[in-house]
Image (tube, rainbow, N blue to C red; front, top):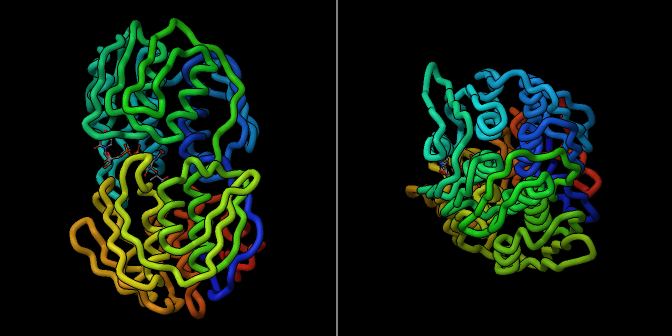
Length: 415
Ligand code: EPZ
């Protein structure tokens, strides 16, 4: 089991390049299932979750080669089952459900099971497929769905669900008639997927708004496309500049995907400026406390909540951080408190009272973004921080220590 060791107190300076977005790459790679042929996707990040989705697609019969550019040959999809042992390691595997029903007329996908940050059911994915005429049964922990051809209809999502929107948008591309997704997710990753599907011959309008319209077509064709930069990785590095009092240029990111974070970091006293091809994040003054409430895009992203909490633990005041998306996304709190943070949880809010300095400690990663939060805290803490269970971090960040070291961080990975 790898560990990451950080000696804190170093200001970060220099340039860091942002990788392709994990949460765009996953649905885009799955979209290749919708048509036979060879699709090519660029700017794919080197992450454990990408390895997992490749395994899952190969398990369905796809042939895949390449890493940052992948070629996916879906000529011979000969299996419609996503097995538990794969799905339990990555809930985003549920994204194959819609495309398999649309392309093959059937799918047997394991229910994802529990997850550290919440129950994360997929009931909205299932209901939408049923609304489109699929016969869906839950048997032995699997979702079994079949439909000769899905029928376009109006779908209302009780909750704006990112992968639910993506799953059904993909399925609707090949349905008979028009589908309207009401209360659709508006994340940039949904827009990236819709653009890729349209270049495959789909007829989608409204992606990025609350209502997405999909006119079903009889078939799609393979495509070559690129994945957008990872806004969560970019935001994590902006916060790294803030928590170390540094000056970092975050290159290859799209600042228009991060308005909520950028405005909050400016309120906290950071200088965030747009530069050619990215953003420059500078913290010259003591960070001030700001209040945060996570919301669906364009609200403050839940995937940056743990990271900005780390920043608030050493800010100059009281910050109230409210998590509205997931029911259990405060597992980083107890670990931050072991580093001296002064945090009180009250329901789905955490009151974070800033302290002058965190102290390095042995801490444990519990989920992907909590791990990032603890690395940020370690960068700022006095002394040494030892982070265990780093496999969590490798799911969503490309060798994070390799990107932090050139910026001046004293960080290393030990097995
Ligand atoms: C996506 O997860 C992201 N994952 C998550 O990123 C992200 O935190 C989340 O969206 C919210 O932005 C990928 O895109 C692969 P949701 P997803 O469906 O789609 C409830 C990371 O760190 N819900 O938008 O699974 C659900 O419980 C990961 O990269 C239902 O109740 O999230 C949650 O409370 C973590 N029923 C809320 O909706 C459903 O059928 C939003 O979940 C579906 C969702």
